[in-house]
Length: 284
Image 1 (cartoon, rainbow, N blue to C red):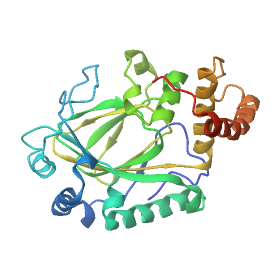
Image 2: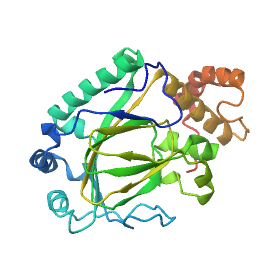
Image 3: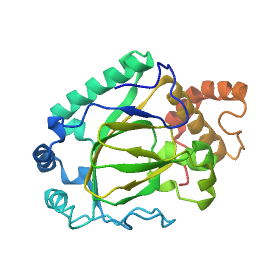
C-alpha cells in the first residue's frame, strides 16, 4: 500500500492509492466460489440491480433476493445483473482474516499508528455485474475500497452534506438506509474517482457515496476501521443523539470545539445512566 504521504490523521476528502491485490489467490474465481460455499447464507447479501450504467438520479438499493443461490448468482453475473455483499467474511475463513491483519498492519504503518490503535476493523467482499449502479449510501466507519477485478467510478460527497440527525442515526444504528440521496448534494460532490484493478480509494468517515461499474464483472474488497480521532467523533454524535432525545438542541459536531470536549466527557455519564435506567429510546 502506498499513500500519497505519511499522515497521522486521515482527511475528510477521498484520495487514491495503489493496492497489490490483483492476482491474489484469495480473489481468484474458484477461491471466491469456495468462500461462497462456506459462508452462512445470511452472511451473503444479494440484491437485484435497479439501473445499469446511468445517472438516473434515484440511486436506490435494489430488492433483496433472499432465495437466490450465492454460487449460481456469482457464476451468472455476466448474463443476469446482480449485486452481492459478503458480510463478516473474515470471521468465516481464516485465510481472509490473515490477509485483513496484514493489510491493517501496513495501513497502521502508513498512518504512524500502532495497529492496536485501529479498532472495529472488518472487511467486506463486493461482487457485482458490469454497469451496475450501486446505491447512494454512507458507512458507519471509514474505509479503503480496493479494486481487484473490473473497473468502476466512485462518486463521493462530503459528510457535511448530510443533516446532523442523519449522521447520528447512522452512527447509532449502523443502518445505511437512513442516508437518502438528495439532488441538492451534487454541487458539493468531490471529483469522481475511477478505479482499475490495483487501485484503491479512501472513503472518509461517514461520507456518502455511490458507484457505477464499467462493463464486466467487478470484484472489490473493502476494509473498514476506526482510529482514535474517528472514535471521538463517533462518541460525540452519540452524545448529541442522546441530548436531542432528552429535548435539548445540541450544536453540531465541530462547530464549537470547546463544547465538543465537554460532550466527550459526558459519554461515561450517559453510559452509566443507560445501564441504570435503560437507554433513551431512539426514534429512527
